[in-house]
Length: 221
Length: 112
Image (cartoon, helix red, strand yellow):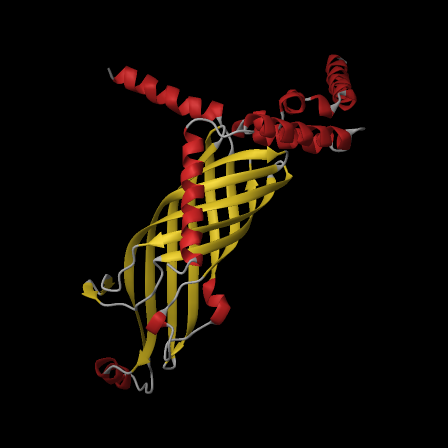
C-alpha cells in the first residue's frame, strides 16, 4: 500500500517536472489610491503620491500550457516622525494567484490574474524616554542623562481578493516587461487591530476597493 | 627508458585529446541542437546550467549570433503556437478576471 502511495507521489512530481519546467519571477512597482481618512490627517504624516506607491514581487510556476500559479506580494511603506518620534506604517498585500494567458501575437502575451489575498498591516512607534529604575541604576555607575529607547507596534490581518488584466512583451525569451490594470477588494475593519495581544481600534482607512496599476520586469524560464 | 616512453605516450594522448576538443564545434552540443529544433522551453531546469555553459562556449564560434537569433525566434514561435488560445479551465479563469475588472471600473466610473 505504502509502495503505491510512493509511486503515485513520484508520478505526480515527475510529471510536473518533466511537463512544464517554466518558472518566472517578477519585480515591479504599483500605484494604488487608498483613502486614509483621519489616518492621513495631521498629526499623522502624509507623503503625497509616494504614499500610494507599492513595491511588488512575484514568483510563478507554469502548470499548464496557458496557466501559471504563484505567490505575489505588494508592499506599501511610510516612515516619518510623529510628535518627534520615529513612526512607521506598512501594509503587505499577499496573494496566491492563478494567472491564465494567451499570445495574440508573437512575443506579446495577454494575461488574466485572479486570487485570494491575505493582508497584514502594522503601525510602529519608537519612543525615547527616561525610566526611573534604569535611571537610578545608571546613576549607581555614575552615568546620567541616558534615554531608553522603546519600540512597539499595532498590527492587523485582513482578507481580500485581487484581479487584474495585463500585457507582457518579451524582449528576450527569458526577459519581458509587463503592465497590469486591476483591483484589490479588501475586507478591512478598523476594529480588528491588536496591540500587545489586546484588541484595539485602528485607523479608519478606505482600502475596501482599490484600483491597481502595476509595471514590472519579468525574468523567467 | 620504459618510464620515458610511458610519459611521452601519456603526453601525446593528452595533446591529441585537446586537439580533438578544439576542432569540435561547441555549437553542436545536444542541448543547443534540441533548443534550435524545439525552442528554449524544451530545455529542462535541471539541464539549464549545462545549456548556459554550452551557449557560453558557443558564443565565439562562427555564425553563433545567427544561431542564437534562430533559437530565440524558434522559442517565440513555439510559445505562440502552444499558447495561442485559451484552453479548458483557463478560459473560465480569464473571463472571471476580465469581467470582474470591467465591472469594478464601470462601478467606479459611474460613482458607485
